[in-house]
Amino acid sequence: RDPAGQGGMGGRHAGLLGVEPARPRRALLSDTWLRVLVVGLGCAWLCTSLWLAWSLRRDPAGAASLRRSHEMTELSNEVLILRRQLASMVSDADEAAASGAGGTEPPPPPTDALGHADPAADTASRHPEFRLAMIVPWLGAELPRWFDLFVASCAGSAYLVDWLIFHEDAPIDVAAAPANVRYISLGPHGMGAHFGVQLARLTGEPNQTHTLVRLLQHAFATWPYAIVEYKPTYGDVFRDYLDGYTHWSYTDLDLVAGDLTAFVSRAELVELDILTFTFGDAVTHGRLYLRGQFAMHRLSAATSRLWLACEFLSASGGSGGGAGGGGGSGGLLHELRIKHARATRAQQRGEAFRPHFNSAEGCYSRVVATSPTLRVKYANRMIADFTSAPQVYVLLSGGGRRAAVRMCAGSEGDGTAGGLVGSPMRPTASSSAPASQRAACDPFAPPPPPPRASLLGNQRPVGALIPLVTHTNCSEWVEPRYRVCADVSGAWASELGADGAANGWNFFYLAGRWYRQRFTASHPAGLIEGALFHFQVWKRAYKRQGPQLAPIPPPGESAAFVLTKEGYRPLALRPAGGSSTGAGTGAYEYDEALASIDARLKAIERDGDHQPG
Picture 1 (cartoon, rainbow, N blue to C red):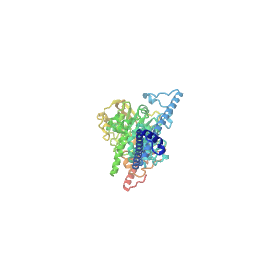
Picture 2 (cartoon, one colour; picture 1 turned 90 degrees about the horizontal axis):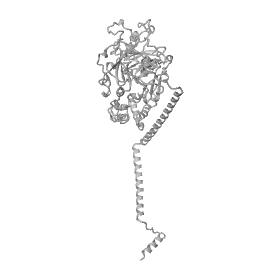
Picture 3 (cartoon, rainbow, N blue to C red; picture 1 turned 180 degrees about the horizontal axis):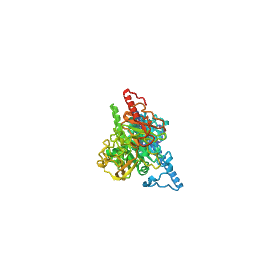
């Protein structure tokens, strides 16, 4: 009857009686949802842990790769900060030096460039103003069999040129190198790591550093030849090694060098952004492209990062439109991933795979030829085996003798011959001159005089610049969208110059316009000289020779060699009583030596004797 009283009494004594006091309905619902939430979170955590464990079991390197990628990104950012700090310090130091010296003298105008050299510098061992770095990365555990001859020939250009050879712990005898040859080891797989880090920075994709390093290391290890695809980037990728240089060029190892100092003028170093050497096919076939053996760039903002306009070298999603690159959505990373994927599929199928490589003679040449602010010269100064005489003579510097690369003018078998580097085929323009009236060919004729700080070069312009018409119907190995060709259908292309020289034309790209200009060259009578000799075809036979084609003397010792398509051998000559070339001392009889060499080569073929000598 008194429920309120009972309820109150029950409430007061519930604790004593062991009975739970009554709770409101809202409190019961709140506790229930809290329990559900805790259980749900626990289940989610458990499921996530199980999924991660399953993922790591499938890819045990996933976590390590993710961590390495994060560390590489952080390291790249730190390097960028340090580089900015260093650039600021250098800039401050330069400003302080300039203010302390009362300012610097502005460079002479291009028209006066030839007259501002210091005569006192002629006796120096290095040019006082200019320095050219020839850059060549080498991939592989073994060096090419003609490497010693290549290195020995580099010494002939020491007045102006250094050769920077990057490698991955290749077996190189550093002690035997001339003073102007620098070996830089990047360590095992270091080439791919260096290119990956630098290209990620240069393309503005530091977050892709790890991926680029991994893909480039795979590409360089699988296809060492792939590195030629990145020739245009050398000046930026190896920029840290170019302090103290004013110019740089990419180059190759399948060549020998003469004295480059005699083939580069001071005016070209001052006025041009890019200078490339051709071997006459610019006139005979109209090919206007930057050669892989010599393309000298001024180390300046005008030539830096031009290669980014090529789609296959650009950032991801880059258009590469600067060279008509197709406006694609690919880029460097996309290109490498495609090659890697195709190589993986071919390996799984047990098939051989060689990917397509983009040539520096293609896209990059087009980029340069469509940049209206550049000043570019295509100079006819190189010898190549597919248009050379049957014998090419190489004189190594030493003992007071200058270096030289030369062949006999008008030699039998000299197919396109004559003025491939602007030298007269014969003493007169008449092809009917009897042999008795032609200048004798003496491989040991005195070369041009020693280099001077004025760097006059070996060519002189004849006449004014003449406008040149271009088209895109040449160089079939280059993609049509990248071709740049001179119209050589006119009679001018086959005319001999006043000095009897064939192919005596150089080409220019100046402020967006094309020109041609006749030149005359100074060479010893009866000879054609080149800055370089490129043996692209002959090296196939050289690879089949013994461990060394011929012994090379130590640096500083003079020597001479004759190169043919079968190989190269020392030119063992004896002094002759006089000179039929009017050169005085230094003329040699060499017919007997050539006959002896020919006999030795035939004996090698017959008996399989691969001993050097």
